[in-house]
Image (cartoon, rainbow, N blue to C red; front, side, top):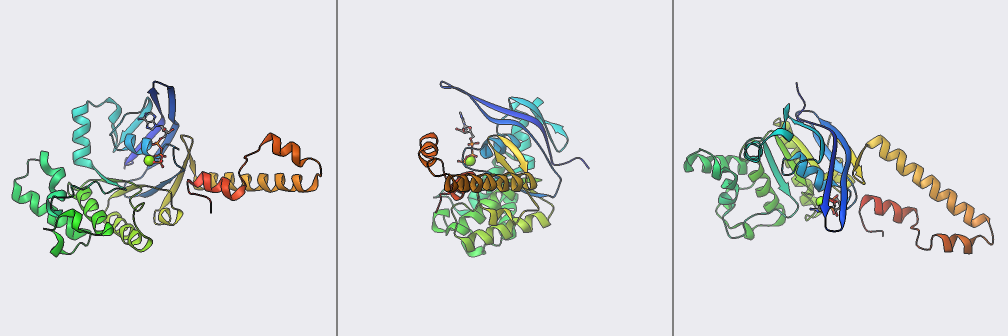
Length: 279
Ligand SMILES: Nc1ncnc2c1ncn2[C@@H]1O[C@H](COP(=O)(O)OP(=O)(O)OP(=O)(O)O)[C@@H](O)[C@H]1O
Ligand SMILES: [Mg+2]
């Protein structure tokens, strides 16, 4: 079977007044159908850029991208919009719900361009909401009357309402407490059990642990879990060696200090890499 996602040698270079920013630098990635993949990386590493390209919201500057076997780099804007509406679902950190519209109306939104009659749209929204476990008593509430976890479940229902093959989620638990985040992750696992492919971006290793596989992005390049572990171990060894050198070489402290006055220590470096504040 062709993979859900097969992207090769993808570059994305942003052009701004200040010059060129290569946000993706030769990314290659294959995601099997039905796989649950997590992408981890620090802030600014290129996660959203990659998700926008994988989700056909943006195009690579160079490289090839086959989505379910179709070369989407060749498609017109209209065809891309059709691919998004029929095959893909999106979930974002900030839920992106219409606050004053009812839960049901929010979930029906992606069907606005479909041929379905209103009654069937409503039915599809009910089904999607039931599948994410939101109690029916909330369906006619405004979305701003819900808790964060309930809002994210509505957002997942909205991503599911067109029965997409692939769901993209960019930091879906970023605004939720741990317990609520776990509930949302269980919802994604349920969707995977129903045959969906899931690509989830996160800063959080505990969240990534829910996925079948994790890849890491650093400076616009992808690394496997194994490569990332080796890189971090290597970094820790070098930090430890540098610390020992400084301890054991009296008189060299001034020189080291003047060479790298603000060099972060191992935990700060790791925190920087993981995109979380150092404790
Ligand atoms: N529209 C744009 N124009 C110019 N540069 C951009 C644009 N979008 C992103 N970038 C740059 O590309 C790089 C990657 O950005 P991206 O948003 O993909 O990072 P990210 O990993 O999603 O970060 P975060 O965790 O903070 O969301 C950054 O250097 C960013 O400044
Ligand atoms: Mg981002």
